[in-house]
Length: 107
Image 1 (cartoon, rainbow, N blue to C red):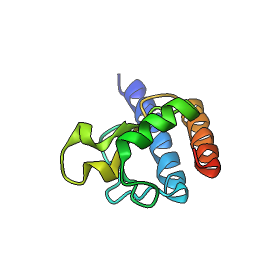
Image 2: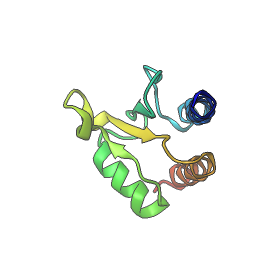
Image 3: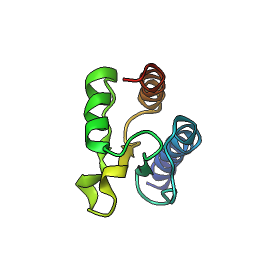
Image 4: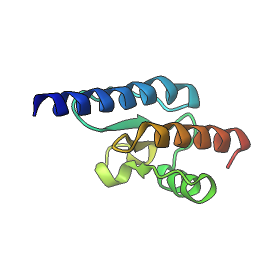
């Protein structure tokens, strides 16, 4: 029903806004903010030129799952990655906290 759909839309929008506000401060550039999807495609050149290795490092060392850009195309894919916000807000906050700590410690 309409009420359920609106509730879901608002929840996804809150998650999207959180990532859009936090990711740039961590070094991820978002050229085109998402408008209808549930993921953010970000440039990671300020951190690395190898998004695949970076994603594996974050999974192994911080417990944060991020998808490398090469899974979504070939144009500068090694300098891009994708963050999903299809999970809950608390999980996103925890992921951001872990990501921040890992970047700070140089993992």
